[in-house]
Image 1 (cartoon, rainbow, N blue to C red):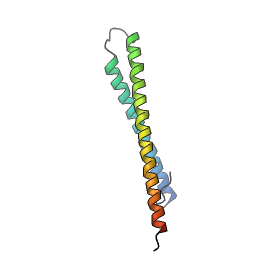
Image 2: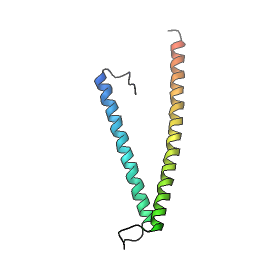
Image 3: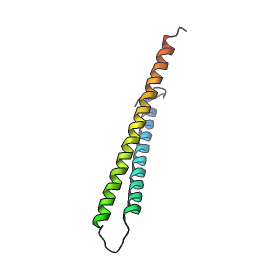
Image 4: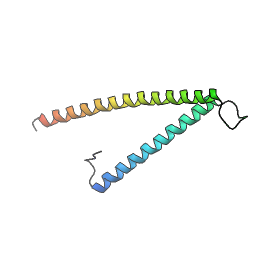
Length: 100
């Protein structure tokens, strides 16, 4: 990712590292949310130390549903980012083509 408005390579690297840390944190938060939600929804008995077949199936379906939802959200986000980037590029072209 390019941060042309930042003065130095060091600043650019610091921002890139910060963004990467945020992505990792968000991934962990998302995974924990999935685990909490699916566990609460699917595990109903603590009489044995193993999951029942129904609990396993419920957990698998819950996780699959969650991942499909995440994919749809990410797709919509990327489409919106592309629109914003195209709009920004168009505005930049218009500014450059105007006589000063």
